[in-house]
Length: 292
Image (cartoon, rainbow, N blue to C red; front, side, top):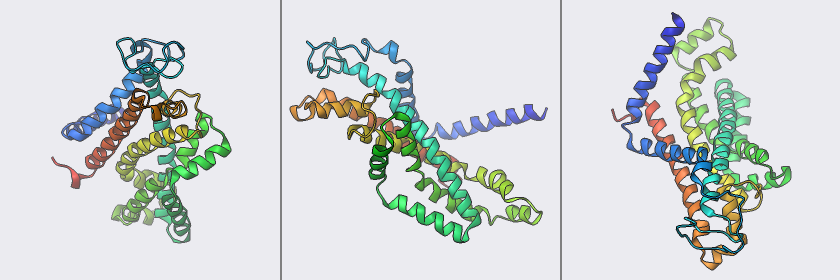
């Protein structure tokens, strides 16, 4: 009975949140953009007319046509197929790196805000360092040292993108730990671990969800930039890889716009979609920002 009532309450809360969320036009637009790219990534074998490995030397940098909707590259590969399959890696990096960044940032923010004192000072100075130094520079340096495999790139982006989440979570914890019911749990002998993860963490999920969406957009851009600069694995089929070879082949300077414009637009659109979701989630979980 308890489990059944909990499940009913969960779905009831989801419905109520969706009612609020769907009235946010920007949020719905962002969700539609992200779902669109997830769909084409999953259905890539059915959408693409050509295999991404298929080459045709006779079709050298052909402009868009009925045969090749996005044109071809310098080895005759169909750019529409490459862009469709490229969504897979970009989404994988975005979600995976965002999970790492949010996990690290949330943990540091919780510990720093709850315990305070010298530990808080040390953790916040480290956080400030990562906030001040452009992360893409550190990503390029560390990525070149560790190697260019996809897993290394995801880890590097994740561990260098946690600082904004840590700052925001810490600011909320500083307020939540002073709430009367938290003070009452402390007086009753509640352990720090229980207080942090059972009573404080659930009250910070709003900013964690919002920051996860924003972290995903940052990860997608960072990955594309690293691959374009040759730090990431240029053999992994991604939008950054397409831009890398567009530059290496001289397509950028020769005016072959069909080579670099589509992946650039896709990167911007997907990032924009995650940004809209992030701002909408912040409004959803913050009653002061709700419009209804």
